[in-house]
Amino acid sequence: MFLKEIHFPTGLPRFLLAVILLVCLSPSLSFSLGDIWVEIERFEGSDRFAPCKYCGRQIKTGRIHRDAETLIKKSVQDHLTERGIGLRESKGASPFINILVYRFEERKGGNFAVEKPAGVGFHMHLMEGSVMGRVFVFDEDQQALSENVLKIGKFLRRGGKWITAEQLAEEGVNAGLDYLLEVME
Image (cartoon, rainbow, N blue to C red; front, side):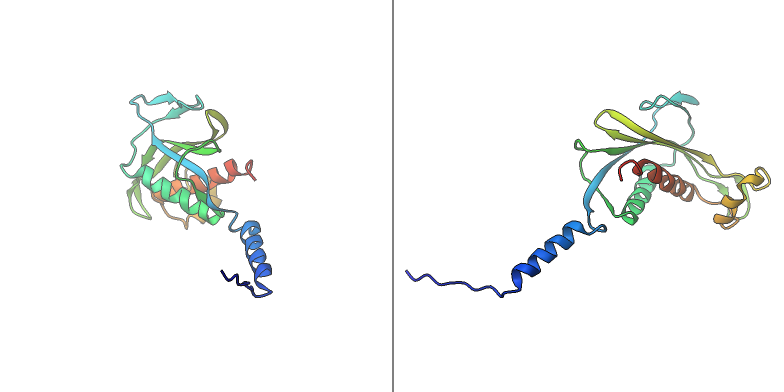
């Protein structure tokens, strides 16, 4: 048998080491493998007011749009991706976010005039196993500027128009992720 020596280019080990360090230490890639699992469920109950089954806080239930979970999940995915965090495919033992949707009512009307504004209500629970950490509550019905002049900043950020339930939920998801994820940093 003949043994042949294999010669690697002299820069190859250094190049591979640099690539490995870059991938492991890059902040934009550090969460790319899917860091957090998100569970979204709708409140099942007919009572107008009921306690949340996770945190016990009172919730004001309402109609829930048939696509509410899908719309919220897409918003969560988008906002996590913006933060460089991926979604895990399974619950596991690591922290996860549970979102309980109890109201997702679409507006009746258009951008500049409505019969009924959009309203969205959900709780976001940061959980580790069965232990609850933080809770973020989002429960909002859009109001006309004439009903609450103190919310002029919100009115202007929304372009001075009536928004959809999906847009309202997106605002809530973004604020909720800011709040819940600050303890994980």
